[in-house]
Image 1 (tube, rainbow, N blue to C red):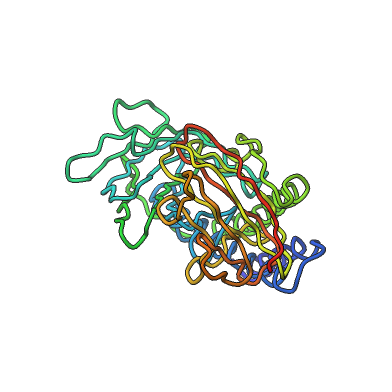
Image 2 (image 1 turned 90 degrees about the vertical axis):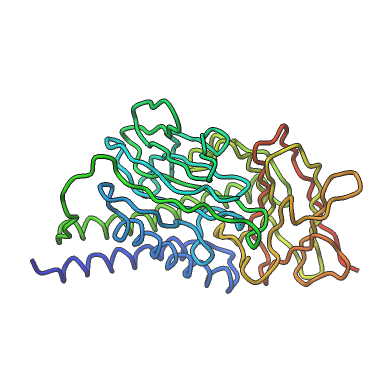
Length: 354
């Protein structure tokens, strides 16, 4: 088969995805440049998902969000692992749980390329699991109920998501996990032109669908959460792949050059909390090099046990919990409460700097 038409079709479809960014008005040069970079990042993730780790018969873990490719307000404290599965098959996840404070496993029906949803079909976290004394664990992923360490799936499940959440990455040991199919077939995953065409088509659809989905979120937040927090519909967030053990509280932020934002909140009894900044595309800001997020282990609390976080364009001397916009004028901010006994709505105040 002559694959040249296949490649031309792929590149033409990919070029057309740029219309998602082209159609957004009121962007700074930084916002627009990051928008096109965002598409390249989504394409990298899509190709990893569809081509390199696309076999449900021979699954393997990859990361659908990480420090240089990001989706949907990715958590800077998280190490995400994803694997492609087929809900008609049974799998096992084996390895060591490490020392991360929060470790959760979910099966999903990933439909980002179709309608922007990633509905949960089963969830467990470390508290639900029996772990051996040496820290090793075995989890069965199946649509059929199992007696112990069962991660439920449905016949429509096509993805496993593992969230490892750190308080301090430099002090905690990540989980080491592999996934494999039970009763594997003695068959190779042989690539054909037809299979490659389908993989490339799904990759472009994922880029387009994901970009449109979270652009819609940002428009929603800008209209209803402009410089203030709202609890929002948690079912809406979970339908896009959110962890049901997490309460997500969003605000759209916009900040003038001579201003700062103060975010104040009480802190509930919870397993973990964090706060982060994203750009207009809901990518976490560059946490590799700049203070753009904090959490319950990193933040300095107020005398009353609450927390005050200050967001500014430049560092403010002597101000605790000072996060930086890294040159952005607007974006999204997010407070996560994990396993919390209540879900406070933070107060947001824009102040002029003196």
